[in-house]
Image 1: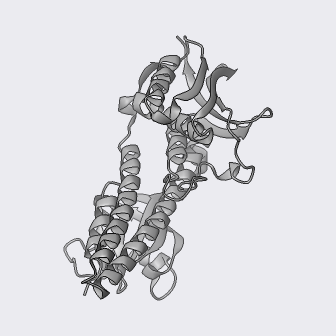
Image 2 (image 1 turned 30 degrees about the vertical axis):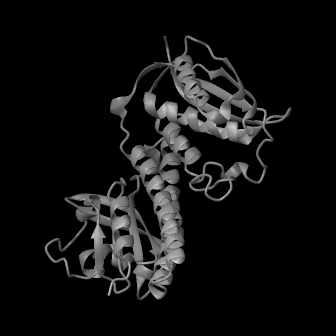
Image 3 (image 1 turned 180 degrees about the vertical axis):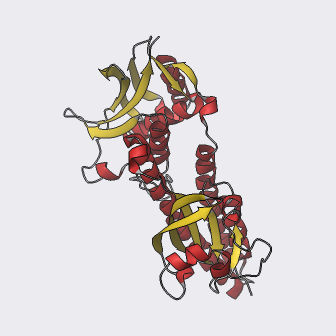
Length: 340
């Protein structure tokens, strides 16, 4: 009997919106779900009862162990799809209801891609792994709560507490899903020529609507002639994420300095400096990792900076963070500039 009907539904709703081929497999090696992108790799599309190894022979052959669907691992796979050689990196991630397999297409040769594109592919791979790891925690908590409620069905106080625990964990997964789906739906079609100062001012205006920023002094010294080619919604999301983190680091009281420079003729670099306590040196290398956060449990998903970094990389730019010598943290966002 399947004791996780709701968990399976939550997972399928989540994976259905992600931009990578994904398949869910139960403990017996049977396929329980595949998203639209993974259906193209199904060798037996009209045999829903066929096991994973029969439906995806190339993937099964590349994975090690007698029950690869229960073993966390990665493998390289080369498949021939409609006369085209496809190179993929597949990864298996354990879940309370079995495991999921994710396939990410790899470039034919590294020489065909720029450094920014390679960095973005690597970042996407880490994000996929992070998604699965992060989902496993609330799913395990929900499973434990369900088992406890089944063992004590007549305890009203326990029922209320258990339902609150389930609701909190479901909301966390939905929050992760919404943020990743927003990013996956982005395309170049929404990009336009934007005045950088106006875009930053709009993000500052959104920041000031929050109650936590009432005592923040914002000093913006941006060149009002700088033009960038970007998605306005995505770029505003990047600035809002950085501004919000700065306000939280300063506990709602301090100064935020925003300025720009031209490291060379092709790029503009925006520096966002706060007067907070700065960032621990041990945390600096991990700031843009998916789900890494220095906030207390429940205070953040750890996706804000990871998605911001993805957005900037997709725009042909880069993002970094450092501590200022006179105190506080500084985030540097570099974007290709367009001549006025």
